Image (tube, rainbow, N blue to C red; front, side):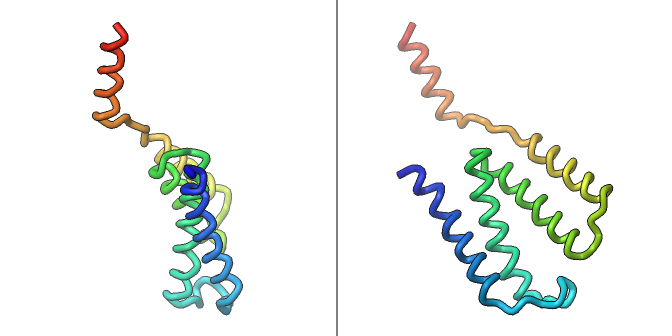
Length: 121
């Protein structure tokens, strides 16, 4: 059941993304796309990437940051602005941002574990 909770959002947002890509008429370029077309493309893709990366990292903040980095790379590539320097800077900034957030145990979990340790003694 726990795996279903992780896979279901991926299937939903991946399906929505595929349906949008399949049924909407693509613009000639990113600069000629209107606001609605951009939102319809990038929001399901972004949510799909967050939930997909969360399976591997098991931490939503890191998944969010890495998804933003991937979306930024896609935008730079579609605008023709992606070169070695901008790509390297995006990768470095995304990596350092993702690393800076660490998982912290909640206060309640640490209290429960300390009580368990006291009982064992």
